[in-house]
Image (tube, rainbow, N blue to C red; front, side, top):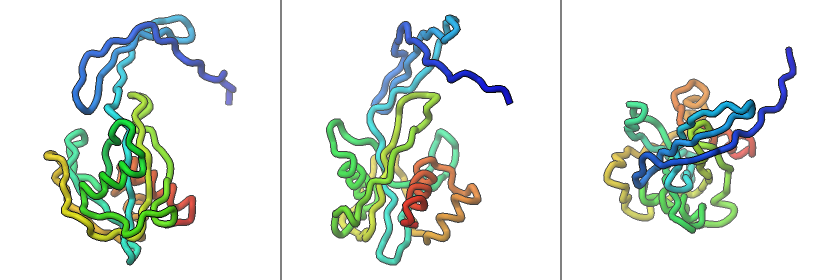
Length: 190
């Protein structure tokens, strides 16, 4: 195999925003490639930082959501989550989203019951969007859920074995679920 040189960064010459809404902005960059050629690159700028929570009840079951996602045209399995508000603590944002979407919270919030798992890029080819993932144990019903108007969710409890098999078999393809499972397995928590 031929050893290739390390890739070099591109230089952004100009950026213009061609679309913006409350969720994202579409930006066109005029960039110079390392060999000097110019190229127009499309990027998505997210409206905020993503957060997600994989939660467990006392029986060790996992709380997941089923939601239609128009971008892929399917009902998918996913974690409760959303965007942190500007300046909001990321753990607090994740727990807020968990409660808003499902009505569940950990009975006690402590370093033993809520743990930071890590972060994942949403799609690094399209932009800097990323999501921070947390795990929460001891979930209990705490409030009535109050999802956003387009969040038409079904809440489902599944066993850890079911979750591992659904990820292994490709039944779950959402990046945050897969990453959360990987972080949990690597830490010996699942």
